[in-house]
View 1 (cartoon, rainbow, N blue to C red):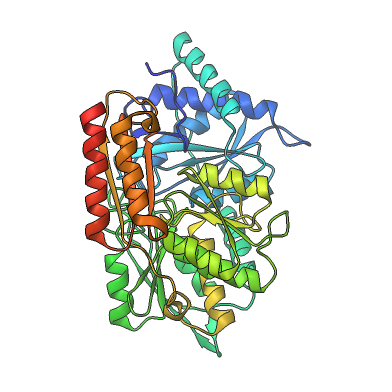
View 2 (view 1 turned 135 degrees about the horizontal axis):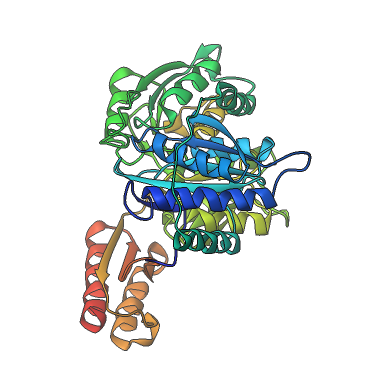
Length: 456
């Protein structure tokens, strides 16, 4: 049995199989109950809020967790179908010691996961997750008999979350008195009911697509990972813009009226510029700052430099983006994938909040999303990987270092190279951006071949 359950985003796996088999899920609930009792919000017994996305396995996992929590005398409040950032918000603003989201985000329906938030609204630090893991393994070694607890959805919970989101755009989704026409691809996921309700509340004319979840169609050829259909629908229907969310709606990708896809990098720039104009982009040292990852496009870096905005890069992962934002006192950061964090309003990436901030930029500027992104030139990018048998320092292997140096020298200021090992797989990844696809593909192939010859 693996001695690590928590990955970079909670516990994740195939529903029904370890670590999401019934006994382990029940042990997770028991361990979280013990942890919650030690972190109960002042003034009463420990309470926990649970939410799920639309996977067919979500309800039984939630019932197991609730029964296990009850065994430790922790009361459960069930939000039912809600987004991951919705659970984070409720946990922070309610009487909850912890929040549990049952979701595997953008993964297919067969997978599921358990994400845990503390009362702060942030995901638990590594040291806390490790302590909970040790409790889980001890419980499994003792042997436990699982049971389920029936749950009733408390509708006021998601309404509280929607009211919070709507309050961040008091002017509504209207331009010159006209309702914006917005297409929403909800990915048959957690945003299926919430996103249409939110944007109608804001006064938009909503065309909601992929809002008929059946337990197995979450993320299936739709949502933030499959945006071609969104772009086509926006263009063909004459909508002003559109948004696509992933399964738990913690990320968002947009499309302009022309059908141009607007990824996380572009949305960071659109929103960052508006925040700078409003005086809301300065970090703790007074410098306008956007936090992104090493994978964000060189086009973002160059446009930030032109706009007088400092771009800070972190390793891949929203966890690292958030840590750097907190360290610097930055207000916005995110990933090219559409996982964007607006720290003034949320403790984690929130796809619906990101969509609101993009609408805000359109409303305040009076410009279309196409106009707001017209000067963003994305550099051609390629990402390749090769399996490796070990992970020595790449810079210390002459043949590999030589190919990297050659590529850097030839690309100069018009390109960028990131060569790194995967944190979870025996894989080396090579990402190159440059002036043309042919040039970067050639450089990437040479570096990949050098790595394969030495380490493959």
